Image 1: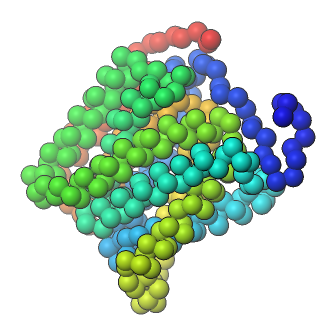
Image 2: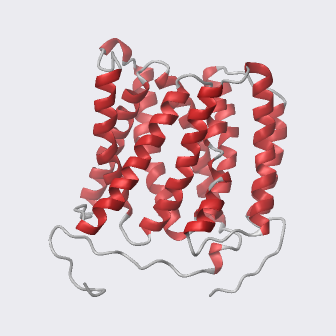
Length: 325
């Protein structure tokens, strides 16, 4: 189909070809984008608390089914209001199947680990994913190359995360299986960010978000019914549990996922994800305020190092001019 040709019923035209290199891909992000990332980090930090609370009371995989069923309804309503076609052309079946499988495994690992951990520690481990994004993007995306500034900023921010991690080890001991589950989820989350960047250059964000959940939700529900109990027991669904699940489903799986996907359509993932090193900070703060989890002076050290790493990576501490290609 030639560009600009009418779209046959039930078929979606690829919205754009892969983007060319732009000055904004490497130079300091606009203030509006930086504020958007800061807002997302705070909301995802709150998600760590809501997730930790819900999976300690609900079956972990069943909690994922409830969360993303709500998110799926949110996107279907948004697509209907905007009259966005969601039917998949045949050449998109395999990419969406792979995205759905990646998404499913990543969330299952996260929920299983989160059911056995503090919100602050879970938030720390899952948000190690920006460490892996630049490496994956460098290999798989032509418009997202590693730079010395990115490596330096990520390294400094990671030292801040390790400081929190070291202190957590001293307080709670080393939970090898739990750490392995959530760390594996972080690696898959990084791969998902890179893969989303590749897909969103060609397809509408609603298609990607809806169909990954269409694949995942029945799997979550089937696994929960086969291996877990009490998902539908009314006594479990207190107002607080409903609030936690609705926050995860509407605010995070809905608004945040959409916002994040739209950012990935415009900016390379390695430029965006380093800001998410601040998410564990919000997770620890909200965990203390809402769940009364312990917090210490190590958090202050982490805040300084994470903030410094973000400043270096985003160019706030260095003048850099890159001509547009």
